[in-house]
Length: 176
Image (cartoon, rainbow, N blue to C red):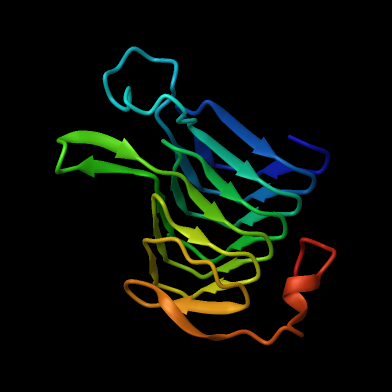
């Protein structure tokens, strides 16, 4: 944890290889952060030699409260990004029904992004820098276009974001 980083009350983090928090990154109260560490002898995920059960938050990144983050594979949240609202789920692992094995993929949330309340983000998903994921959306794939509002089930590009929007150029992590 870098200077000014903090984890609030009633947040539980278990079975991880790593939590990395850059300067002034915050994890709010009541979050449930789980993983499946790489150090065990379990047959689960043995086919993924490069997997890391990690949560990484960039400078001034923020996770609000009452979210579930499954960090069986890495979840990376870029600088000045906000996971807002309540009850979102970030799920890096699932059962690969074709191969009948547990499988996992990382999740990447880019810098200066805003993730709305009550979303589901699945392994392999990427929310590009300077974009928004609307409330109650399902992000289940990699997107590339910055300055875009994504939303829906499954998420798709909804509209372009004004490049003058101050959220995407702020120097302070706290929004007043």
